[in-house]
Length: 168
Image 1 (cartoon, rainbow, N blue to C red):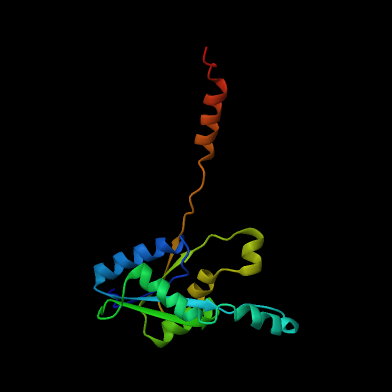
Image 2 (cartoon, one colour):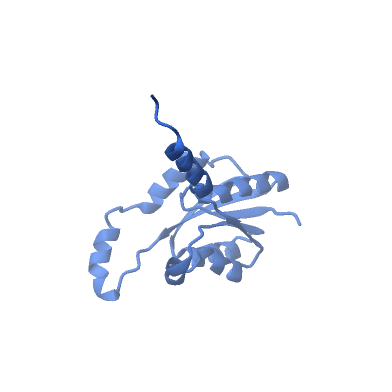
């Protein structure tokens, strides 16, 4: 299967970088265009709080422009580069990713799983999970690994420190 257009949802998190690296490699391998999509999430507030939400949301009046500038800083200027395009939209991440993939004949979505579990996963769900189920094309989910302390190493270091004789 040859991919011509690869979509990478990008939220500027360090975990999303794992997905970008893999998508860049796939795009190079296939000679594909890389579409970087950033979704500006609209805040979810109860309807009775609407006026307050609008004031809070208005504190950063042009979030799309801020996101575009940040994308240029991260990926470079896309002008004149056929293999790279930026897209910034407002909405709900999973819906906008699926909508974009459908509307632009995307061949592959490369998305990073942020590894929510437990109550966080129940309350927030998983954008990656919803995209997998609803996207009109194949989806590659990249498991993001946040740096975690090595408990075995830490325990052995602590044991060595504790058992080391005090200098005379």
